[in-house]
Image (cartoon, rainbow, N blue to C red; front, side):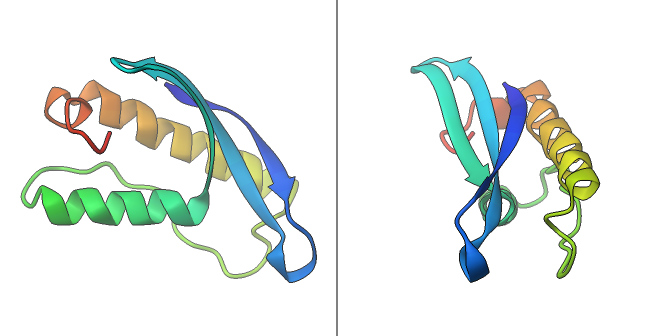
Length: 98
């Protein structure tokens, strides 16, 4: 499972970047788009549900310039690393959330 690209979505004040995640799990193929804020919420959820268990970090939030091409690519790389690390830990990979 991993991030294979990103897209600018919305317009005006609702403009945001969505990262395309592709992979497979026991239920079948995965091909979805997720925003950074969804990764942030997901990590917080894992942290709350599994206290004491290491949850890999995600890149920090950035208030301005978060749609610059270089920044989006770097953030995508680190979000991809987050997903790959989650899948490496058997105790997290088998949870319903992941």
